[in-house]
Amino acid sequence: MKPKKFLKSLFFWCGLVAFLIFYLSPAKAGFWNEIGKFLKNPASKEEKLRPEEMTQGLKEALLVGVKRAISYLGNAKNLLQNPSLRIPPPPKVAKVANFLRKVGFKKQVEDFEESLNVAAAKAIKTAFPIFKEAISSLTIEDAKRLLRGGDTALTDYFREKTSDKLYEKFRPIVKESLSQVGVTQKYQELIQAPYARNYINNTNLDLEHYVTKAALDRLFRALAQEEIKIRQDPAARTTELLKKIFGSL
Image (tube, rainbow, N blue to C red; front, side, top):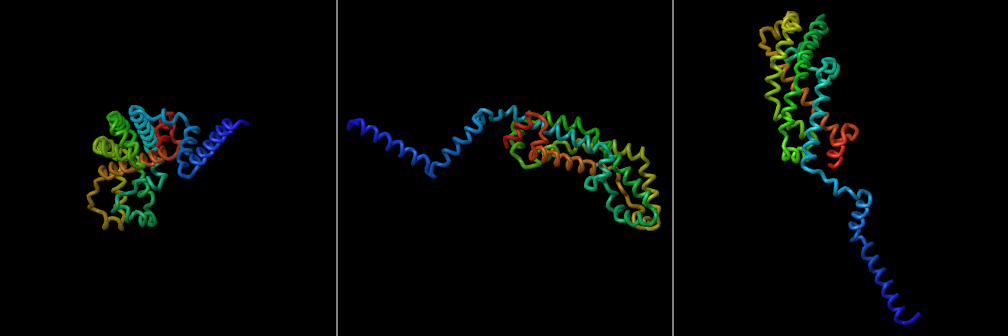
């Protein structure tokens, strides 16, 4: 080989070796990691969510969660059979309920408790229009904040926007339901028990308020569970947009 060609070849290989040593060093590991990520998912940068997509995705998430929660809680059996959701008698009545069950008043206690849950379920069934109105008012700025919020950020948004309206809507329905199922009569039967009479007789129980608040509590609790599921469990994301929105987090 001629000296000039030999020198050119030597410089080339020396340069190549130096280049590889530099870029394969630990200091440049991040560079190669980024290249690897790009090769695995070359379109990731192009798939960045647009604000409109983000907003629409959150609206879908809210609709999905609300429909599931209302469908489940609108069935009184689901309330009654789930210890964490079942609405017990008011606190003062609950204190004597277990005793009354043991001394022959089990049916009165259970009938009274069932009537409370039936009234709550009937009210919950009517909640969707109010939620839908709140969803329609969701702005792009809301979406940005809620998407990056905590596990129950959407539920907290709903609680803030809908609680008062839901209470106003629920209470008359609860009142009518309690009247239809004869809850006042059931309550009177309950407190006629000798032990209960001295403890809870003449107690002013606002059952309409108690059941309405309990229904709201169960509804928001169920919504929170649905939201956590959508955020954390890919299988709960039932639309492509939900998968894209929450898969990007």
